[in-house]
Image (cartoon, rainbow, N blue to C red):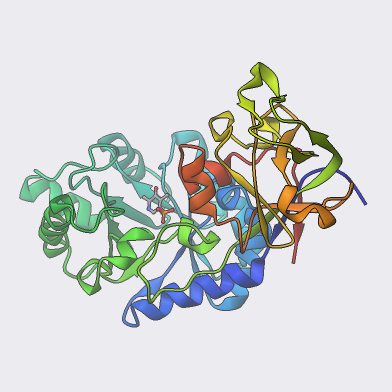
Length: 351
Ligand SMILES: *Cc1c(COP(=O)(O)O)cnc(C)c1O
């Protein structure tokens, strides 16, 4: 068996997470955000699994990503392209039946002259990132209505903080927009928005990270891990009290310990900020990382589970035990960045 790090993508769990999120808002459609190669886990396989589970609406960032999802999810799927179109892509949008998300005046102008495909309108209700402005004249709104958008949407800036007043402020602003498009379905919620209650779901929710097992949902929402990341133990050795571990000798053993060196490093997407912070799990036992993370290697303290620590044994760095958000926090980052940062050397297998 290969010694290389392995990411086992659990498409069944991802489909279960989609069903769990879908059940939160029975009146609304639940889409799936599969941009950035389904957050690094493989858009082709993930979209296919979600399509089989019943998901018919997908969001990607680029038209190129949309083509992959079209192949995976079939002719009937609705595929929204969040970053919007440029002129050279018009034929792609038409031929692959991609839905352009228009978020600027330039997009709107371009779409007005384009061969007709479906479009959505993205308004900026307070994130100040992407989106059409709120302060539109009735004339401008009428022109937008003539584009016959299939969806109006906006994006929450602070949904991970349920108490933040920005959430209700954005909802209020979005209500004004949706009042101006009374016959058009509306969408505001990303994953964390799905946890904010019924008033945020509108007609369609757009979870991404939660599908892959990320976010910190409320107690009643049980998500499953979307991926198991494992690395092989290459060698074990005894370290005497006072021994310094790794580059820079940033960890000094306070007592005699058994160490194991694993084949995983920052080239595989484990941030260096996780030095002396993250935990690998060996047969259900937590093994703290000692010292810095190297490009290809990471050192664990396996003293408490030494009988399992054999060369070739697999250590879990993401999965049932090694929770995505806990590992990400230990590296000073978020589940989003940890998942999308998994390196090309990590072998993806699908289960
Ligand atoms: C990425 C993205 C989402 C999904 O966000 P998650 O936090 O991963 O659920 C939804 N909507 C828009 C506009 C996005 O860019």
